[in-house]
Length: 163
Image 1 (tube, rainbow, N blue to C red):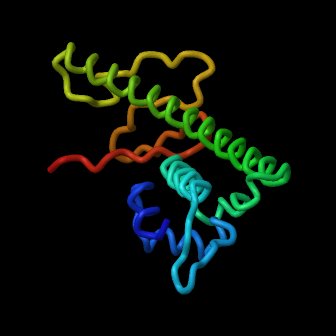
Image 2 (cartoon, rainbow, N blue to C red):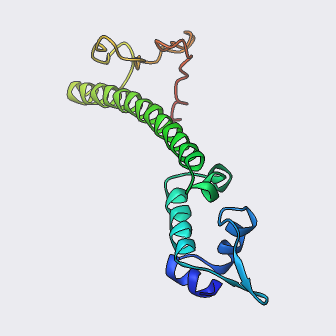
């Protein structure tokens, strides 16, 4: 099949297929005269490239793809996937900590709302932080005081007050 058919079957463009070839991701592509000829293996490989990109991989990271049919190629791709999964796990932990901080802020706002008070540190205090949480949201200090720091030692700066 020619490049246009390959592009249609894989949901990409001929330009993208040429890029994959130029980067060596398709291995050696046979030619018939001046036309590139692709087979079912190329369809599968382009689909794999597009799937990997959808999962956040950059083309530069897929250099082991042409050797995917070999033990070294499989090991290279397996290592790449393991690294990506580790990065995803770290991001999930970061997002969980962020969600916990947002929950604390939401609870503080509900407390202030229930008291019909302005959200000020001397009026509304956030509920105590559970043991083991990475960082606690603390109410911001009044004018002239220093900004609090999180459990991780990061200085928290108050939002600019509305005027």
